[in-house]
Image 1 (spheres, rainbow, N blue to C red):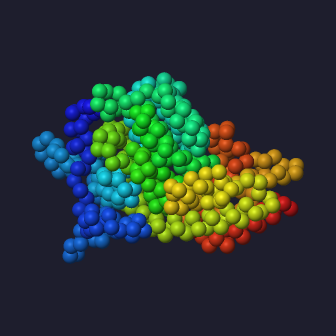
Image 2: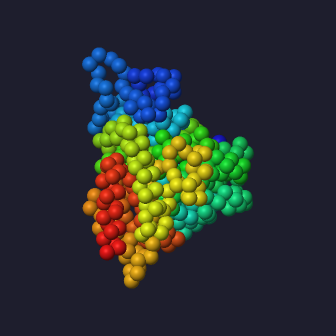
Length: 422
């Protein structure tokens, strides 16, 4: 089998194969809408004088004698009770059969997911993807650990072709994939839409595992496990926590072997979350439905108005009928997200990148900062980051629409555009 018995035993001990005691049963939770689930999931039992919110546990070790048994926490790197509620809630939101796994950062989760590829395996991933993921994958390929194949993830035929001669699963039982398909949909920052279900099926036919970064969509907008993905990744820093005050990541799977392997990697490599950060993430998760609904509605309005503005050359937003992935997004998503990307129309006497920088600096309400998914609206020119691929246009501006009044956001954009014109 993929995992040796020694690793399985190690992972069982550290898996916390105890269910977090919840006030609602699995059956009751399954009957709830996602909007209610974010509030109701992973509440402590309803017992007299017990808190309605899970507590923060600040301890590096736990009482115990003799050999560690299944479910023993043992040590703070193996487990923390403050992680459990968030991991339970995220697993339920993604429609998984198992709790998620919380990590110290999104890239710690990326590292853990990539560890599923054996030496010499093939990684097929988008040309446009989160820059940190691209850098990590590129370094693994440069060192000879994996073969990296990058494709336009919105081009289904190209992705299938890249998978065609990738090595299939290893071992007689087919339990160890030698290849991985990495999906982002929408992609960062170009907002390409992958045909997740078709690509997952093609990857499985090729013997590859499928990991989908669901950060932009959130579990409320898309559930990749139901579309065939094996593992779902989140930068919890973004929408799930939602307040730009923690750095965390997460992975979710319904496959016990995969979860055990991921947990083993997290434990051995130490990419664990702090208990206070885990508690903040759960608190942020409670308002996810409200924040996502508000920001998506405002993003649609902003995108439509920008598309009609004479100083805007290009608008990328899956909610616009002009977006090449619009129909695909409608079919597999329940919302179009709240990220909008634009390029200005040519400004006489000014380079495209300088014009973009002028616009960003002229904004007074929008915050000039990287990241996304917080309550505040953020804006930046993506190529200001050296790690951003050169295939990203140098003047591409990414807007993360927050929860402010959309008319205030639009007024700020229009005054900045007017100053650019003047």
